[in-house]
Length: 536
Ligand SMILES: Cc1cc2nc3c(=O)[nH]c(=O)nc-3n(C[C@H](O)[C@H](O)[C@H](O)COP(=O)(O)OP(=O)(O)OC[C@H]3O[C@@H](n4cnc5c(N)ncnc54)[C@H](O)[C@@H]3O)c2cc1C
Image (tube, rainbow, N blue to C red; front, side, top):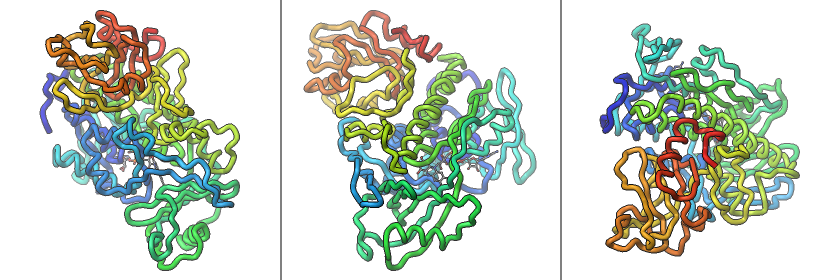
């Protein structure tokens, strides 16, 4: 792994506990920021369990930034349509067409890839950076922290080991030892039903042609079903209501067959029967210890909200760790991680999970997460609508019930899109974000606006204009040409507005352009990134 280009305030690495998808993504993200880390994994290898199967556009964007999207995509099935079918009548309802997002994201599709294939893909990317990142058979049993670091006690085949870390990122899943050790309560509710998942090896393309979309939600008041075309099998997910019954693999197979009709040559590859929760840890940050992923929240996996919400945590924590360890911010920045990601899980994903359950059970009245608008449904269901409620309304909803893209709001994920740099190269906005905060100035570069130089590593400045900056203009090297004003219209802000985008792509401030405005907004975003603190 490359050593940090910036001096760090400590030589101690960050300890990541757990090599699930959230731990692996967090590690890739820390590597992107050149922050040293070690992953401790209790198991002998990555998980082979039948768990998550669908990954959304927002997660693909995050993996792309941290260097993992190609490795993932080459193993996955891409899906440009989320089927929405009424089971009783086979009537197609609000099928979600994802290509409508082609101007908004590099990934106008979602993918199907079982978690047991996804984790090795992430691991493959990690091993290109460093081949000993994961310490298997290392179970963290307890820890103690002081002002300088965290001391972990680790059970290994060679006996107990002690490890000194700067911070401990707990990605140790729903039964988190770290969370228990902290005595943190998990609040929320468990659902009465269980979900059953069956992977069938069956040919629904040629031998038994069915023409189902690769990801199809069959709603039904009694027994809904989700059908997922995985690279090597078809996955069926449906609720089971008999809480005491021990369902055999054959029972689950029969049910799956009942959904698709009589088919030839069927083999059960795997099954899983699991309880469903909406539970969130009451506190996520404890000094040098931070909970993320399933350790912090257990969310109904329907509409792919479980793992994908955890990846949002990884994206949110990584730049904060970098800023704190580089001495660019004090560690209150971790408080704002909790202040932001907890409502994202509780309210943002929570609202979606409730909507998913109601919609699948054909109780669609009042379900705002699905509307008649194709664009809004696609933006919502890909988690591109994820929003931090940083402004006065404190609205954390990820649902975008609009027919057309609305103007961006504080806390939104900044939309991606193509502009052209001063050498004429097409440049994606998201390619500019990540390593630093970025101030975008929506302005007319003919008027020689005052745009600060790009001489600080933590804050970069770019003018966005439909006018090409004159060659003798002092801002030409930091101007982005926006033919047709398309990006400017997508952002929808008034002329001469400065939009400050954080390294995790979220909008930290939108203010009229003025000398020092970006620096002031940057400082405000770092010191207290919650709603009272952001200037109106
Ligand atoms: C059947 C099923 C289907 C699902 N489908 C979807 C879906 O389609 N889409 C979606 O988004 N989500 C889905 N989910 C949810 C998804 O699987 C989880 O959200 C995801 O695995 C959470 O990742 P994680 O890295 O936080 O935790 P985990 O995947 O649980 O990983 C935690 C890791 O920590 C290790 N560990 C635990 N304790 C210690 C310790 N003390 N020391 C060291 N290591 C430790 C564990 O061995 C494990 O490897 C599904 C879940 C299930 C069960």
